[in-house]
Length: 114
Image (cartoon, rainbow, N blue to C red; front, side, top):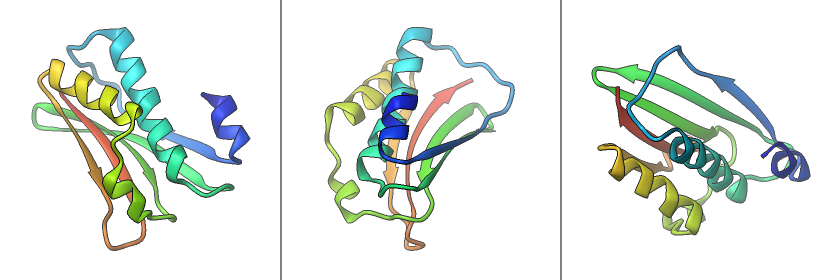
């Protein structure tokens, strides 16, 4: 993963709480890697990407965000990476979401029950 980031000149900042989810470890790792790959695919070089996790109620949401380079092409992202994220989310009783807010950023999120 670090090679893919470095090749594009991207930096990954990580901020996650100490929490646990009921999910297959291998598939969860694959889903998070694919979240990062989806954002890398649509980011411009020399961008700082953020990976964060929050717990709200009974959901842990893992989000990868490019805060500066919103991409309209991400709205139609249907690649293999996103399909893997959605499959893991649904198999774990969660969901996956792509957001392109008006502030110029974009986010890809995976929400799982805790």
